[in-house]
Image (cartoon, rainbow, N blue to C red; front, side):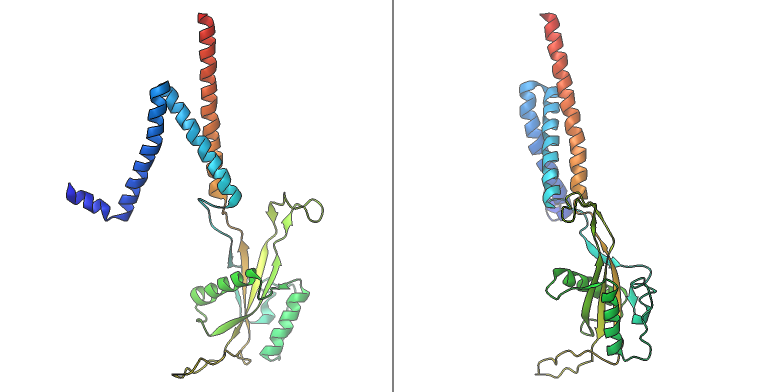
Length: 268
């Protein structure tokens, strides 16, 4: 017996399940026991389940309002289709980033990157400032794509020059500014401009040299699509399910009370 208890104590998963089961049994069971000893087993069960479902519904509504508690997947940047990494700025139209091809033939990489940037801005893309939090999120996602998924660079071999953003408008709106009922969104895209760096030689005892962009290599462009996620979906589902159970048990209590009053009136 002692060895069994020690084995359970050193297994976090089993111990966690047992703690949850005991907590549920003690908290809910003690409430049902107290109510049941006063009003009876059946009526006590209805009252306890109604209170539990109502509390679950209220808690889930708070979760849904503030985005806390049990949450779903958060918004994130995902690789866009049909092409995620564009290695030639002239091919951005193939990735459906711009409508027409950009003529950068026979131009050096620096001039070509400048012309591509101007073309993106002219096509409605917005350059995000370095202080914009959305820029950092897009760069972090682009790092994961280009380092882990594509395995094209490793950290320190490139730098993010610019981040372009387009789309994501909310609708329907009332007037120009009131968007309280704007539950739908247009697709939102981001393009992260990647510039290779010159390989620096590390010398013992000296600080690393400042990173320099390799002007002999073309820039690359990581195209991403914004996934809005479903952060509040679990809370809404719990609130909806608990609400159904709450109103069902409340209706059963009401029907029982109605039958009791009718029977007492007949006896009188």
